Image 1 (cartoon, rainbow, N blue to C red):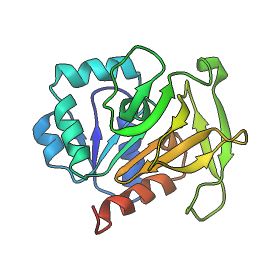
Image 2 (image 1 turned 90 degrees about the horizontal axis):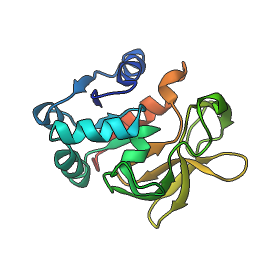
Image 3 (image 1 turned 45 degrees about the horizontal axis):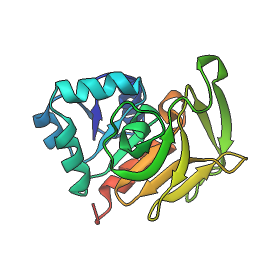
Length: 191
């Protein structure tokens, strides 16, 4: 399991994977990416992340990685990078998942919040989700399944084939169920 380690909370994802018994490695180069069977794009600052992807020559290889069927999970800024469309003019997303996203849609840092989520297919009760400067998914295209939504119906966890995206930060909790679910998704025969 690779974790894109250009910027953001990649170490926290690795800690969650380790706690779940899932081996992982940091990805900063095309060679490291190609050695992975699946990839997590962490939360962080999406504009900086996009600039570093371009500086390291990772944009096209990341797109090919996902389009080739390997599982990719984007959390918060990672969700922004997976989107087909952003309501803002920057950064340029990877255009991999048919969703429209508004950056910092729930407000600034002081507007951070947590919420219990009922997640489709997840056992063990609600998932306590942490939202920090979280993006809002404003539109979901065909072929995108909503796995969890807030009480107002806003989607916050979506899946399209080999792609998973969450507006929140599962790595900032002690609940590894999303990490385990992604590991199982990556290990499934169709991937």
